[in-house]
Image 1 (spheres, one colour):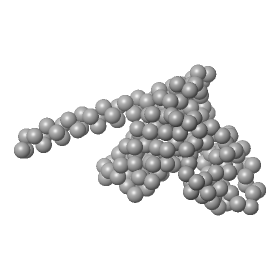
Image 2 (spheres, one colour):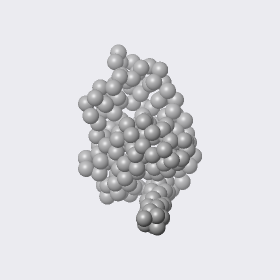
Image 3 (tube, rainbow, N blue to C red):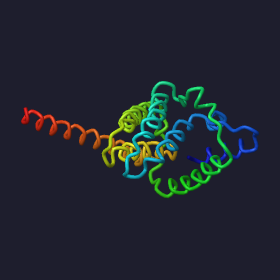
Image 4 (cartoon, rainbow, N blue to C red):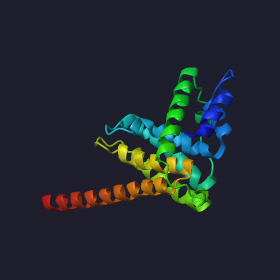
Length: 195
């Protein structure tokens, strides 16, 4: 959620019917990052939300694929036609203002090459992988929080043009993959000992 989201909401709030598609059209290319950030907000806490994680994880996964292959948001027609009430729009607006203040405080290293196509493809692949992990209905603490945190830092870094935030998001993803690999190996070894 950046200044462009705030501006887009200001532009559409006078319309008789406000849809997600109308906001996305006004934001442009950054919309996939903003849709991803809005989708992971419920998971920025350690308690897993199994039913919701599958649905919102798939939304973020689509945005990751959109970043890799299209360079723009990937939304189904049903997602575009989703109507937003004034109450929900005001809630998103307030969250965008808070997020904008927060990211401007943590943003440290602006780098002009962060918005290159190659960086977006790498970030899109990491977002897709993290979203796939997020969408798994695992009843394990932090199973939603860690991929959501990875997606948060990558999206915030791309929105702010901050290289450090993007690298930090990739480090979280790499450590999560490493932990999953070690856990799988330990479980496989214990399973072989039992049989």
